[in-house]
Image (cartoon, rainbow, N blue to C red; front, side):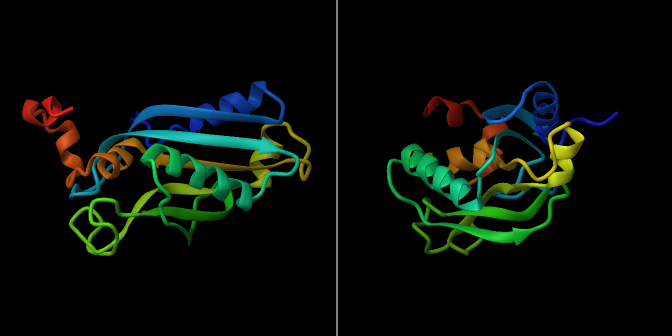
Length: 175
């Protein structure tokens, strides 16, 4: 038995009972074997998105993500995609936003880089669609998994992710 490390199992169940096109958001609490620091925690909340259709591209993903971040933060943020490996997407990438705590100058939240990784993403691998019973090559889609606490850190200028689950009522009372 293991606690879930992501909410992707919901995506699989959804694809088994629905046909494209569709767009879904899946929130949930996840658990990781991870060393903690100002931007990493072993228990956090994640929200995944899955968008599937006949003409879905990385450009669609980037537009939707940039639009979401602009509306969530009330301003345009710099975003970047870095190549990465995740077994169910190809290509896969890490998704970073410019650090709002230091405005990109470098701080403990972003490890002095000016960027904060908010999650992983990628184009859904065709083998996933085939396993779900979809005609191979007919659909494309993207998926992402973003950490909610990291987004809250940037929105509310919180310098350490460990405050969210630390139990200090002085932290929660400020909201």
